[in-house]
Amino acid sequence: MKRIAIAAVLWIVALYIAQSGPRFFGGEAGSGGETKGYAQDISCSRNWWAFGVLWSCEATIVADDGERYHYSNGNSSLTPADIGKRVPMTNNRVRTTRSSAASVEWGVTEERPTSKGLVVLCLVGAPAVALFVTYRMFRTRKTSDAEDHDQQRPNPQGRNR
Image (cartoon, rainbow, N blue to C red; front, side):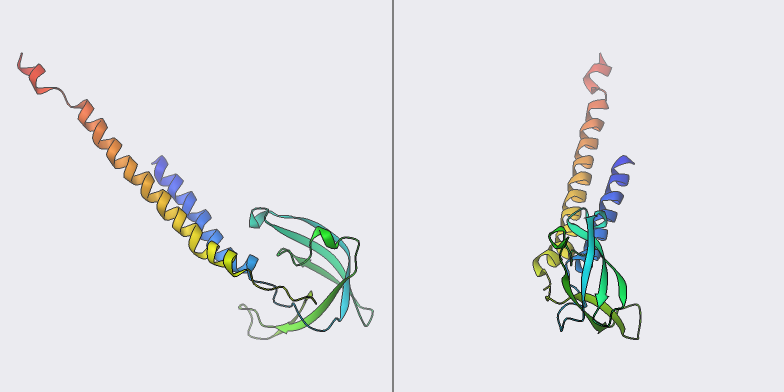
């Protein structure tokens, strides 16, 4: 029962990594384009939903027209290296999977490319490791059961004497 619980937790973590990898390492939807404002008052912390690999930063965007917008992103589009600086930002119309209508989303002006290697590693690597570990766990369990069963069987020679 303990091994089944461990395998279930392992698969939950593996599938979480597989589904979140493209989101975390897939680049930034709103990145690239003409500067339409600047991010300032930046504060950052580790993004623990990404196991601390990425930064989650909040900032205030001051648009060219003087409007101020709150900005929050957990995909390392801003990092602690940007604290104390005015980072050029742009807004692009993007279409998310949840909505059929395009919405305006702020992103860094400097285009952030997709980390294809990390996306593939998350999509394929995590489930592959989970499959390997699960296979080894249950393969080991079956062989140890057979050995335990053989050791508990009484010796037939001992009964005849």
